[in-house]
Length: 435
Ligand SMILES: Cc1cc2nc3c(=O)[nH]c(=O)nc-3n(C[C@H](O)[C@H](O)[C@H](O)COP(=O)(O)O)c2cc1C
Ligand code: SF4
Image 1: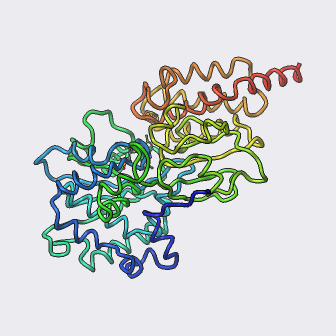
Image 2: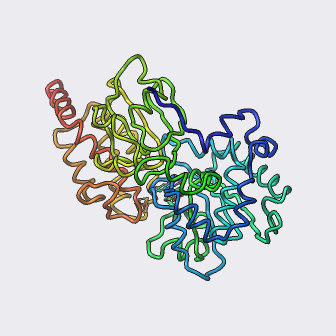
Image 3: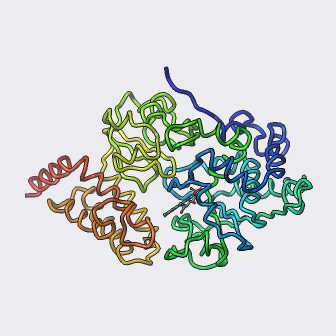
């Protein structure tokens, strides 16, 4: 039986394509009902009985348990801030964009629930600068929500106050990394901070801060509506609930698909994405956005469940929830070069292995992908990579401050793992021709 989507976070926007972002459309489909109930609960009950019980893990990339992250806030230290990461710069990821544009009230309800749960009275949304329509709809939604008493002072008569500030980014991918984001929000150049201290202890303006992704927070109203334990029954193992996967590349029906965690790559690609174009086969795929290592079209890989931990057996991650699919008409070296160019361009330059290494990786991959590769190029790339991510365990080992440098190594490791023979044979043929 082909699978279908399990629409929870995407339900309103799919059911009401013409008005899901308006206050009328949102209220007609139950928006802010859960907030009303949440404000009658204690913050501890929301944290423990709902969010912790649901097993919710962050949808921004690292998959860290949301309730655990909140629990790191030092007790009795105020003010504290909630910052929503709406930068969505990871190549091929386009789910937050959709949630912001088409269901801003769901996000606002989630922000209000999270803010009440962590006892913060001022939240920020760090919004990718290019999301022009998203900015208009989100700021209009904030005004509407304030007018109706869902934001501002004494929300719904509960005595809880919350304001939200929307800050537009200026196009740097690194500003999606949470500490670079905080620097940028403070008006500094967006460069990651050295940890500790972690944001929970000293984040925005050196105050305790939680940084959460748009999809993570948009899930909160549904966790409270269903009940944490019930939500936690969805999904598989420690990957509970649903996630939105941005499926792209050479599939017949690219797009955002919300599925219960635990379905396989094959089901996502074939049942929802309509399979590879022109009846082709998957040659390789990149899960988790550009930062992850790659998978191939082998049965073992295609039948791997979308489980944040199980995918680790192949060295990959679900990351930001993107899956790029390629068939045998695509040169993997060219793809690796294009990704390397992105990382070299986006490196903030704060640490030497990333600043220098990403540039060299890009240059060597350029010549390899343009018919000028040398026999020892691949080994040289691995050596450069090993200096950024020792043991080549990208992105988990690093000589750098943040995981951007190691992310640039993922494609190199994948080329060596799956395409070494093909690449060396190609170099040998090119050398013969030129001789
Ligand atoms: C280079 C880099 C870019 C990132 N970009 C984003 C982003 O655009 N959106 C996002 O939510 N998280 C991004 N992250 C992850 C954040 O640092 C952080 O883990 C996340 O916002 C936490 O939210 P969550 O716990 O709800 O997943 C990025 C991380 C790195 C290293
Ligand atoms: S790893 Fe790269 S992007 Fe991250 S702090 Fe270092 S130089 Fe900047």
